[in-house]
Image (cartoon, rainbow, N blue to C red; front, side):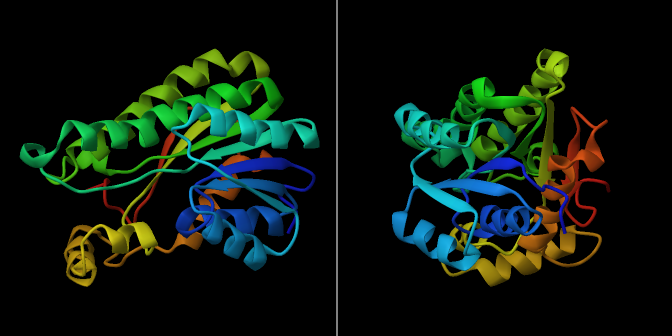
Length: 246
């Protein structure tokens, strides 16, 4: 397994769920991974699970100083091949109950944090590098409890269109992966003890009839990070059991 042999990658939100599964796969495929997360204890646990070729840098993507500190560490390896901007939050609330603070928090992490994670990576990124964002099919579906979350993911789709055009001259590719519901701590934490009921409801919306696994998203990330996808840029890749297709 050497699809990413010799590559240097950054994964934001790497301490659990999709980020951790992807960090494990990237290392298995030969990459050296820098991962970020807000909780040091979770990062330490993730590093212990991965075991080698990984550095954890505690930080919040909505804090630009934390991003600068991250990339200062990455610079010790020279250049950057892959950025997987995965950090995000989901706090489901209908429009009528969203406070200004709720709105700002979601946009600061999910949209602003991604934008500046990419902007600050560009001076280090090799020609021919790969930028991957974690989106969501929710921006296409209009699910009532996700007005702000869905809007932030729509912003990521727009960012990728622009970056596909802006960065093509350097051979840098930008793509979005849009997972459906996935078995992660974020999914469990959204529904205050009602996660099992919500998962059953989600299953009725998914043609394949099941919740996704973090490892299935990681496989898509490996593909978009590798030279196997060298002629793919600007796409939104659903990995959702058919959720947005029907």
